[in-house]
Length: 94
Image 1 (cartoon, rainbow, N blue to C red):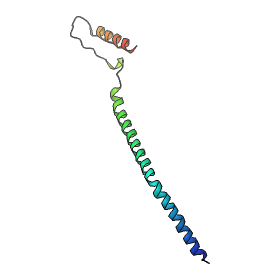
Image 2: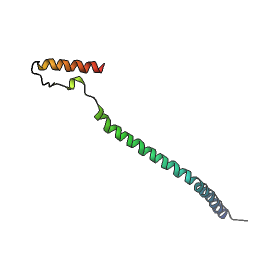
Image 3: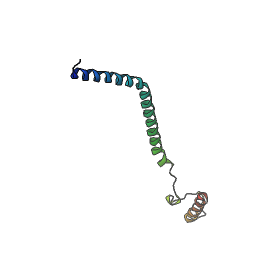
Image 4: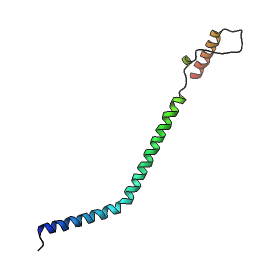
């Protein structure tokens, strides 16, 4: 007969061997999933960075942001050209 301590030690070694073999078999698929996840995370981060930079640049100005109008014709007042520009912006917004 084998002693109980020796049996327990042999049992744990056998279990560890099976566990190690299982881990070795599953390692390639685990590594592939890890790489895919890392690439997807980098892609999402890059997309968010580009969107964070591009969106403020694409923000259109409203009609209230334009307080001056320049024209090379002296016959009309500044208020007239401001009104014309406001009407043009309002028509485009509709």
